[in-house]
Length: 53
Image (tube, rainbow, N blue to C red):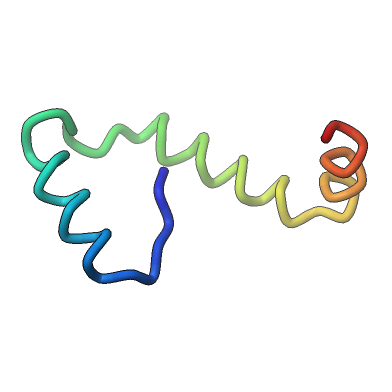
């Protein structure tokens, strides 16, 4: 996943990725991302990530 506020980067990525190498929305992938983002919001995750770097 690429997050950016730069419109120029977004356009370049869109042209390189869509529609060729990206498929449709897969519900198990969406659910996995939701769980991941939820865990990343927890204080325990911040502590864990500070220890692993």
